[in-house]
Image 1 (cartoon, rainbow, N blue to C red):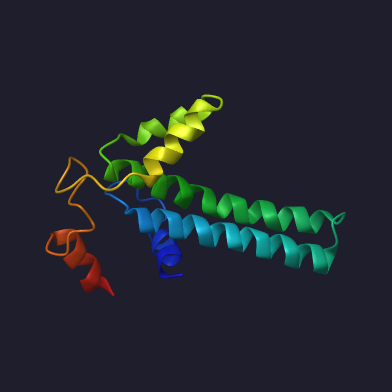
Image 2: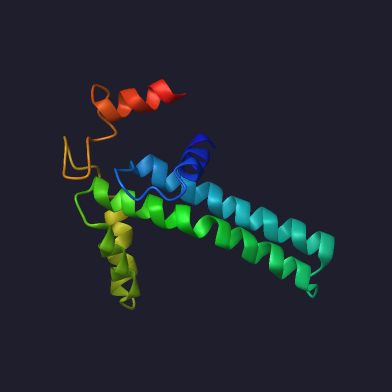
Length: 132
């Protein structure tokens, strides 16, 4: 849950790097939140009520920017530009390529987007630990 909140705190931060753990934990908790929201809203308002659709769309709109930001930071972590997210628009091949990149281990050391967040001795890790 901390990873989900960390991404939300970095709402529109497209700079820096995001570890695999940060990306996948955010994705997991985001999907769980969507499922829970759909279930609760369906039980409370029913499927035909426009309020249920509005609440779900509001959640989607609220998390689209942090989702894009963590995805761009994830691509930065493996040494790719955030613009590579556009490969997802290529039918079949694009999403598979992005999935492989999301599962790829971090580029070791520092790259042009910052220090490796997995390195304990780097400034990013120290700054993150100091903020909590």
